Length: 108
Image 1 (cartoon, rainbow, N blue to C red):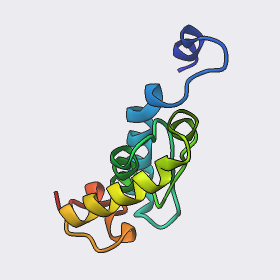
Image 2 (cartoon, rainbow, N blue to C red; image 1 turned 90 degrees about the vertical axis):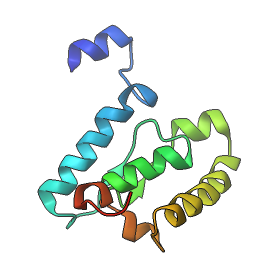
Image 3 (cartoon, rainbow, N blue to C red; image 1 turned 120 degrees about the vertical axis):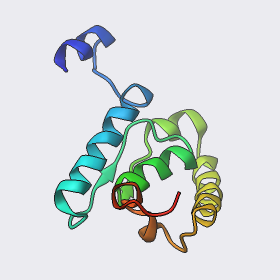
């Protein structure tokens, strides 16, 4: 909460420190809405794996901010290749099929 943000320093928290909490929030909003609204996954997205975590939790869009700062523009092509590999591994033919899979109990 507010106390935790104050302990972290001025400006609050972003990136990796909020990754698990933001993914849990995405999962809960997806569950509550039945996936009927677009959800933007954010917080600690710096790879295909972390983007896929948000997608499987229910995000139909993923915000990449801190990751691009630290990894540069090649992050997007790396994420595209990595997401394709993860989707194939789990038997999905598109990102939209994977959205909310963890909540719906689909595939791995």
